[in-house]
Image (cartoon, rainbow, N blue to C red; front, side, top):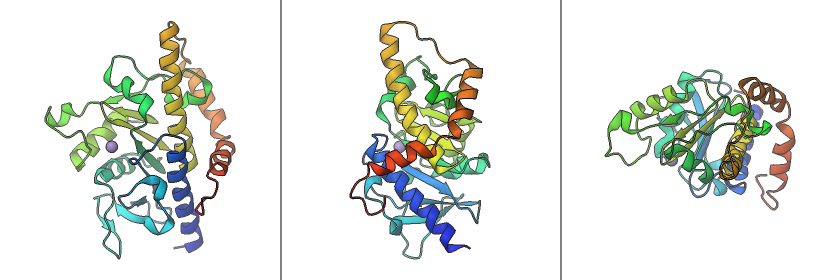
Length: 240
Ligand code: MN
């Protein structure tokens, strides 16, 4: 394994944790993972802790069974099954973010579907699927994706989409790179705020399927620019 390569991946993963916390996607909760570039059946993720406090030393390696391979025996997040199932189902996905990003919650609990309101969120496509946990375990769960069956059901709801909402819980966002996943998580939250505002004023005109796909293609070449901005806002952060 190229250790320099791994160091870059881990450094980007730490930065992603800090950016997502700083931009209001994460609070004390939420997690981001990155597929291992030398071993595609494993991924990196932080041990169970608040994202803004994550350092390179806190990153552990997890396999698709949910087993954490850590010489110190540290544990990762209870909801790591989200990452196991999606990485397994989607070979194109390199990074996954699960958050309780607040503005999207209303869209998971009402008939109002999250749809792209502006060109920055074209990756949402024509509509955003909602995962209903009751379809798998009835009405008595604690809402968490705490096992493989729930992870797999969520991955099935996500299908080929970039984003799925979890009713009464949060969302999951995937990307072909960690920078793209961060971009999408931040613009999913901003799209939800804008869409809620627009819906108070009248009937919004959403991007068409073609407009959404074409904007996503254009924006995919521009993700380095906001990443540098968001990173620069982490002033005084030794990991930034
Ligand atoms: Mn959660």
